Length: 510
Image 1: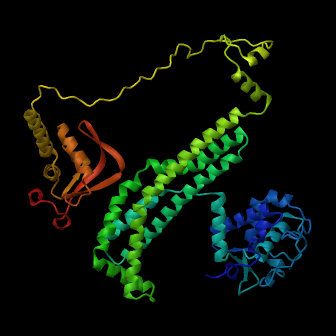
Image 2: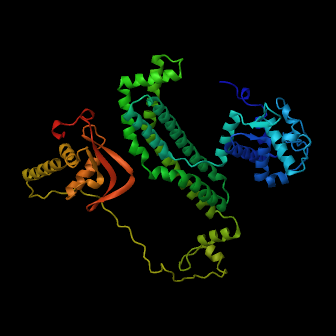
Image 3: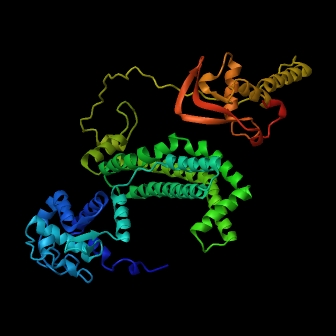
C-alpha cells in the first residue's frame, strides 16, 4: 500500500488545524458546491461563490499575523505572489482574477486570499490556458473524495436500506431473465449494493453505540432530552431505524436473491460466460482465476444476506439498550437534582404520611414546619386502578371419561383428510391454474373467491409461491391492495411456469 503523503500534499490537512479552521472548512464546502455546479470554473468564479456565501465570515475575518506558528500566520496578510511551488502562475495574474497587488482589506481581496490558501495547500490546482493568461482551477481527485467525505460528516444522507436490497434483487432478476452479455455488470452492481447495505447497517450499529456511550456525559436534564429527541430520534430512530423495521424488503426479497445465486452456482455455462466477460476487463486473470472471482462475488452476496439476521438482531439489541439506558439516566438526573427544589422534593418523599400514626424522628424534627395535606378533584379522581388477576397453575385439559378412543381417532382422521383435500398441493395448484387466462396470467382482481375456503386457498397459494414444486410463480405489484368480493388482498399476479422450470406432479399440469 502506498503512503498517504505520496498521493496528497503534506500540508493538505493544515487548514483543518489552523486557528481559522471553521472559516477554512466553510470555504471548502463552498468549493465543493462550485465544483458540483460548474463544469469548469476560473478563479473569479470561485471568488464570486465565496463572496456570495461567506460574506459574514470574510467581513469578520481578522488580518493578524502568525499565531503560535500555525498555518494561519499571514493567511490574509499582504502576500501576493506567495504561492507555493508549482503555483507560480498565481502571482502574476492581476488582470485575470489573480491576487497580485489585491487590496486584502476588501471582501474580494480576502476571497482571493482564501483561494490562494486553497491552492497552496493542494485542495486546488491552477492551470493556465494555452491561448492566453486565463487560469482554470482544477480539483484533484483526492480533494474531490475528501470534500464529499467532509460534507457527508456534517450533512449525513438518509440511508435507504430497502433501496439497496431491491437494487440487488432487481439486478439479479433482470440478469437471470435475460442471461445476456451484461450478466457480469449486473453481478458487479449487486455486489456493490450488497457492500453498501452491509457497511451502512454496520454504521447504524456503531452510531447507536456512540449515543449509548455519550449518555454519561450528559449532566443536565435539558442536555439529555435535547440529545435524545433532537439528535437520536431525528437522525437515527425516525430517519433510519424505523424505516428499516417497518419495510420488510430484506425478508421479502432475500429468498429470491438466494435462489437466483444458487441457480447461477449450479450452472457452469453461466459461470464460464461471466468469467469470460471479466477477463476482457482484467486481462491479467486466467480462466481459473476469473471463475474463482465470479464465485467469490456470488458467495459474498449470499453469505451477507444469510447473516443479516444476526446484524439486525444486534441493532435491535443496541437500540433497546440505548432507550433503556436513556430512561434510567433521566430518572437518575431527576432524582438527584442538587438545587433547593430537588432537596425539598427528596425531603418530602422521605416523610411519612400525615395520617400515619407512627413515630418517626424525621417527622418529630419537622413538626414545626407548616405542612398540610391538600386534595383536589381532577378528571381521573373517580378512576380505580385495575387489579391484576392472580393466575393459578395451568392444568392440562381432561378428556371426558365417556369419550370413545376409536371415535376420537376417527374424527381426527376425518379432520386431517378434510384439510388435505382442501389445502393440499394439488388442490392449491388446481385452484390457481383453473382461473388463469389463456396466456397463463391471473391478476389479483380476477380471482374468484365465493367461499371462505377459496380465500384460505389464496393465502396458502401466496405462501407457497416460491416453492419449486408449484406450477406457478408470483409477481408482486408496486404496493397497494385490491378488494375481491368481501376480502382485501395485495396486488399480486400469478404466472404459469414453463414445464421445464418446475418439478410438480403431472396431475397438476395444465
